[in-house]
Length: 120
Figure 1 (spheres, one colour):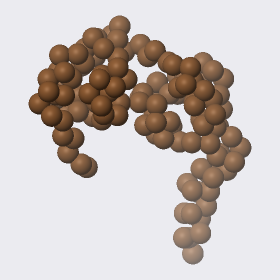
Figure 2 (cartoon, helix red, strand yellow; figure 1 turned 90 degrees about the horizontal axis):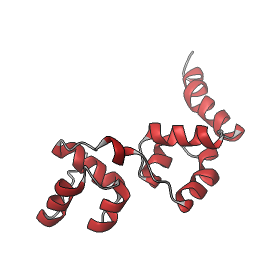
Figure 3 (cartoon, one colour; figure 1 turned 135 degrees about the vertical axis):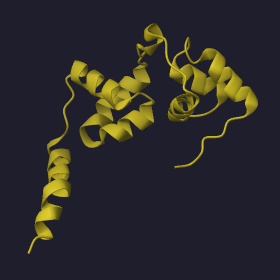
């Protein structure tokens, strides 16, 4: 795994604001991705204030999730949007989103058929 490197100024901003600012806002302020902010915060042992943890979904994020959730992995969605996999799952459930039939078939084949072909 690559080491996440921030400038001293970026790291100072992260330390001072991680508990009180939303992840996306920090990422925009220090010009890195939200997943980078999250991974660096974990590496630094930083924790979020429970009130800040409540995700503020933008219209763009919701539109992207509605369009892409049916055919993308949860990891891909989480990485793109910058929220955790459980947060993505919860929002998808709230919105009534489901995986597409094609996605489910591909997932099944990746998981089971590959192993079946290697038997015998």
